[in-house]
Amino acid sequence: MKKHNYSAGPCILPQEVFEKSAQAVLDFNNSGLSILEISHRSKDFVAVMDEARALAIELLGLEGKGYQALFLQGGASLEFLMVPYNLMKVDGKAAYLDSGTWANNAIKEAKLFGETIVVASSKAENYNHIPTEYTIPTDANYFHCTSNNTIFGTQMKSFPITNVPVVCDMSSDIFSRTLDFSKFDLIYAGAQKNMGAAGTTLVVVKEEILGKSGRTIPSILDYEKHIKAESMYNTPAVFAVYTCLLTLQWLKKQGGIAAIEKINDAKANLLYNEIDRNPLFIGTAVTKDRSSMNATFLLVDEKNQETFDKMWKDAGISGLAGHRSVGGYRASMYNALPLESVQVLVDVMKELEEVVSVQSQLAE
Ligand SMILES: *Cc1c(COP(=O)(O)O)cnc(C)c1O
Image (cartoon, rainbow, N blue to C red; front, side, top):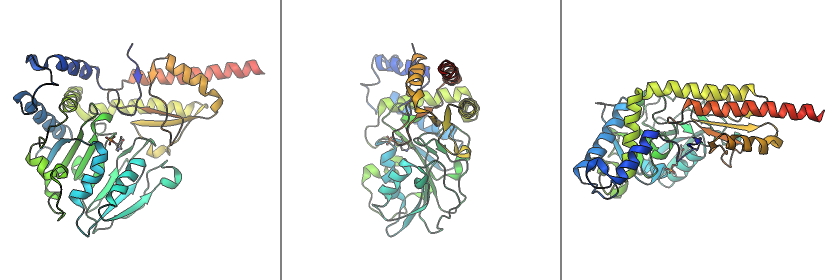
């Protein structure tokens, strides 16, 4: 039986993506060949890459606005260093918002390249909120932020207005909500959170910000070289890119980002309402910054843990354990997780309340 998969990543993808990609492993486009054995330069795969790049731009509403989409490798973690390599000038500086572990990792890499100003941090409160009230130096080469903090369950609901290029790690909420994406100059996202199989990273970059760093950039790390090669500078992650294409096609059929956002909001409301209503649970993120993708919560009384864990596992739920730096539970509700799966979790939480109330009556 298919599980209700709350894994933070790699994560659930639409069922039709599993089916179509499985079919392509056996026979891709009735070619008599598996997608795993064709040349990445073959006509069929070049078409996959071209459509995936175009569809990413289209779904983000960035057509004709000077952006290029790339499917690279090395995960979001490699972007932590490709961004400063390409954008931080020699003797320049960059500004970073420290809103979580991933942001912090990005900061560590930037420091290898030059002056890295942390404009604000919520680390002292274990990243339970998004820092506000900061200023971005007007002479920074770029400002870097993380739209959704996968581990801590917080999400930026608004973005600062600044004259410097804005770079955003959207690994865990890309394609999940409507934003004016033209306000960003570079967006990157590891595929495995909301887009496809692990192994590729989507980079969407406004071309005019490139070529200004004055650095000699190794070819494989140079965005301009990847653009020139149409995202085929070297062998791309063929299968992972194909799963991204299938997911983006599925998303377009659902009605695009605006349509999926409504469902994502409904899922998040359903779960957060229960976390707030049910006296046995407590959320860990500050309410106004709660993520619609990753909900983090704790049991008020740890003695209920064994019972609760058995109950959700028996209900066919998988991947609910919290990250070690927060503990408790994390429900990742990415695009492909159906509303029904959230209802199953909420029902289990209500059931736990009944079980605990009966136990305490018996104890009296
Ligand atoms: C998972 C994640 C990363 C790291 O992604 P990799 O592809 O494993 O390098 C970076 N940023 C955010 C926000 C993430 O959720």
